Figure (tube, helix red, strand yellow):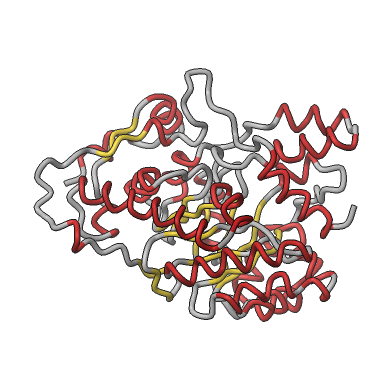
Length: 365
């Protein structure tokens, strides 16, 4: 199967099947957001109508702290989806990322499925996307082609070795990736975002990514789309019993998003993706240390209907964030980043066993 064929198969599976990381036995979401409580402020002393949701990310202003996270591209049938998503990003003044550009780097005839994003969102923050496993193959020249393809404001390098390990056609040579990332960060014409794709980022790797020169980290934590889950369905369709077994075993592998935000909050901006399903989840992410949030899976089905459906979904999430921000007594997103939170349950246990002091979050003034 070609890379292009996999792209459309992945997209359709995300619509047709349950591909999310499974909930814990107690019914809590794998993302860890159910273990996070924002502290209500009964005297917010602010006017909700005057709330400021604007943020600056890698030199570009966004009207709200959201990115439409990398989803698709690389197959002719994905062009309309990317056009719809990009139109929504432009309308709402938020950012958007494209899916892996590998297929279009290999086959320029597929570039149009990505170029449409800039055509439909001429003013939006747009980031490209290439896998870490392909960096040595493509080099600076290949990545600059990916940048030019969509006039990207930044380039994401994605880490998806969990998915690669389960795919029969996966690239499982993870050697020299950090060195390649460092080289790209130094030589590429735009800032680099290093992102996971559903298994999260731990503190030591976050430090290494930062030291390599990345401009931002996208945690891509456990709790959203499970790419091991997606590969499980692909394996079932082709009767691959080994890949199906591995997909099921590793369906819920990874670091929960809430944990990964804390682990990755060092000195560069953090994007929270992986199970962000509401504005309340977004507010919790920001209070934990994220600069903004990425949303993907909840937008796939709306994107197949039309731009209005995507805008309506995102508008609802943005309004939920506004209410949460108001009830925390925070006029700006920066203030929300200092809002007190209480961490409980498995997330608290996970962080404390990892050496993080969870009590400090509840004592923010």
